[in-house]
Each structure stands twice: as C-alpha cells, then as structure tokens.
Length: 455
Image 1 (cartoon, one colour):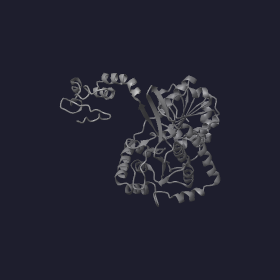
Image 2 (cartoon, one colour):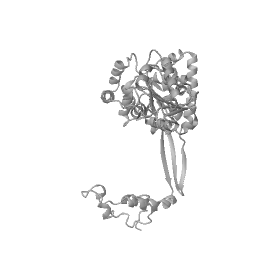
Image 3 (cartoon, rainbow, N blue to C red):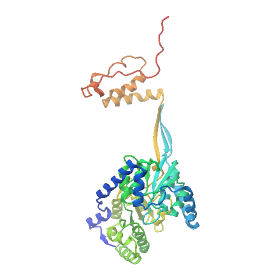
C-alpha cells in the first residue's frame, strides 16, 4: 500500500475524497430503462430481466419455492441468520420514533404521530456474491417499524437469500435487479406493486436509478462504493491489514485507508497487507487504486483527517477518539470490534452513507420506515391566547387574509368582516384581477344564525 505523509496535501485529498466519476453514460442508459418500465410495465421489465439478469421462469418467487429452497440451507447457516436477525431487530426496535403530545400554552397542544409506511422495496444485490446480510439489514428494520408489506428485489436469489427472506418476514420476493427493478418498485407494474420507499445497496446503475426516481418514490440515500477508514496508533498491524483487505474485497472501487501518527505502524501494516493479499479477487486492484496509508503529524491532525473523510465505516483505538469524530456512518471502537462483525451480526445497520454523505446523515434505521406527522389542537381559550401573536406576524408579512382568518373566529358580530379587503391589501395583486388583486368578501364561518320568521 502507498504510504503518504499528511504534508502531501493533494495526494491526501485524493484519498480522502476521490474525484466523482463521470456517470453521464450510466445516467442516460438508466433513464432509458426507467422510462421503458414506467411506460410498458411488465413487458419491459421481463425483457430487461431476461437480458441482464438471465431470468428463467416466473418473475416472482412463489412462497412454496422459498420454503423449499430455504429448507435446504445447512442448519448452521440458518442458525447464524437467526442470530444476526435477533440482534438487528433489537437495535431497530430501540430506534423507532415515539409519539408524544406537548402543551405549548393553555388550550394549545401539538401531537407527534408516528405511522409506518404501507409498503417498502428492499434491493438486495445478487452479482459477485449472495448477500443474505443485506436482506436482513433492510427488511428487518422495516418490519420492526411496522411496515405492512416488504417487497424484495434480487436478480439471482440463492437459497441462503431465501432463508433470510423467510426469517425477515418478507411479503414478496422478485427475481429482478438493476435499474429495471428500481423502476418497477417505484412506479409499479401489473406484477410488481408500487412501494412508498426503496432502500438498499447496489451498483452504479441501481444508485443512478434510485436517484432518478427519488422525486416520485422516496429512497434511503445515494450510495457509492464501500469505504473504511481506520485511525490507529497502537493497533495490531496484522489485524489492521486484515480489515483493510476485507473491505477491499467488496469491489474494485472500494476505498480502504489507514490514518496513523506512527511511522512504524504504517510500515508494518503495509508489509502485512502484502503478505495477506489474496491471489484472486478485487482486493488487489481496490487497494492499488483507492487504498493508502496517511501518516499524520499528531493525534489532533488524525481527528481532522477522519472528519474530512466522513467515512462510511470508521475504526479507531478508543472512546476518546470516537467522541471527537463528528462525521462517520458507523464507528467501531477498539481492536476487538471488527468492522466485519458490523457487516453481519452486531445489530447496527450496514447500509451506510458513502462518498462523504456521513457529514449529514447516518445509516439506515427504523425511523427511515415511518411517517412523522404533527397533529395540532386548539380550544377557544387557546385561540384567544395565540391570536395576537398570529395576527401580528401575519400583518407583518403583508398577509391580511391570514390575519382575518383568525379575527373572524373571534368576532362577536358581523361588523366589517364581510367587507372587501383593504385597498392596500388588494394592491399587492397583479393589477389585472385574480390573486390578491381581486376584492374578496370573507364568508362567515361557523354555525348559521337562526332564521328570523314573521309572526
């Protein structure tokens, strides 16, 4: 691995924040696929699934097939899936937002109401390796949040993925992947139901498709290649090297970095990486292109570099350092807290922000699967208490009708409330009629007065 000093500013910046790739070609291809599926539904979806995913047979995996193939998974693997699922669910249940009601003043209250989404789509990659862990990490928090239907898209679901689907309580499992799967879940087809939100990792095509449909269907976040930053002065060099290689084996575009103020540790880790490097797989290319070791001047500079990186995964020596890191998707403290354990079974989610997005959000969690709404209530006493504040602010903004909406409720008689709005207010319109330029008669709201009858 390359060893750089922190004084090499340009090289360090390239490692901490690699240049964004030109995705115009991918975006154009994805737009074509998404548009086709949106317009032609199942016909386009099946065409792409057969071409790109080598689909044979039905698009939806029947429940009895899921049961049959899941049962073939070795018992020790099923037990591992169940253990990981329990830990993920424990964390997700603690993450659920709670409802509450607060009284802001006499007669005025605000309630926070939390309701689960009706249906979500979980994308599970199925390319280089089967990833049951990704299914667990997306479907279980949705179930813990109370989501009614959980739809999973996986281009080639292996039996171990089906075992995870059964454990996670998945409603429907479809053999589809790529941009076509994202489009099908975002807009719906005759076979694939439309979802409220799409979550889960994927390749560049999946990420581009999620970004494209985000105005019509909620997504978790735009995810790029995976990344790890290890900050250590005292760690075991062989363990650190193993962690760097483990992250690099995900993808040739993965980013694996060590930041240390110890030149000796930097040299020993680089040597250990060379000794442990596998003969095959993407790790060698990943570390050669995107990996590196940065030698910081001191611990303070290491903190600064870690915050600049805003890494998906941050591994550090102790809690004192962890407390000073503001930007990281997930933080792993101490030599025994292997980041790989977080990928599978610690319980925290492994669907995390990349490419610096940890500056403004964390990983996938149960709150991503609910709606948080506010419910407001006022009594007559509450309106009396709040009216002056509202009317003052409304008139300060020049919104006379807003003010009159309050005053009409407080009026004891009709007085001038049915008169046109003041000329100063009308002048705010276009001068050609319509909008605020049109004289408006405010109707009386509330119960009608009793009709007078002649005797």
